Image (tube, rainbow, N blue to C red; front, side, top):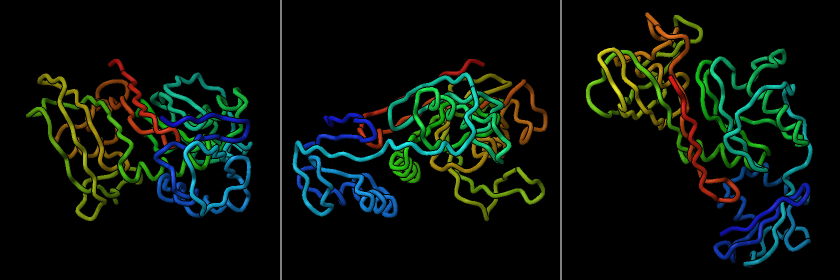
Length: 291
């Protein structure tokens, strides 16, 4: 078990036995997969110490060493803090998971946007005395609700970005779609590209990017099916495009459903599972929705 704690602006780790003999450089590059540019900044600014002295980046760490990294310096939020009633699903010094309401953008698209989830997260951090740059690791469409992950500092953000790219962050969605889907489960493997005839729509296209959606039917009737979806890829509007393509558009989808019933898009990020980027604890957040 890794022992770690926050010491003012510094994050302290008692080097565990499985890191014995590896260098600080190896830890950053090969264990955490931190970008070389960010690693270089830590090294140049002497923001990593071992047992109270600036780290020798090529020297082997020993079990029990006190490794400290300056992670919690004050930085600009990057967005305007705006009060929002947030539902926090998980939080520690490094990351934050929030239940995004439907009808709220994940982040501003222009400096004038101050009512997005990122603005609300900035206010939450400010209220808790944390001046951190707000960084979302993934995003949800405006009309999609559910669990969304933010990093509180650059090292956590870079590790989480890499984890997302390598599909080490598992996201499970629940959706209501039109009609009765045959079978209990399936996979939609169809490339998605831009719709040349519409500025915001996407479509299945042979020249698009690979997109893979796995689904399981958990409830069905002649009129609708409730499905759980897991994404291997994270294309814009992926679930919405894929189910529309197979003839089962999402209920309430005004973009991909010709006759959208319901008062909102029936798509919700229900579960987020990952290994913590720095403490290595297993995080499994469930965020149910009632429709």
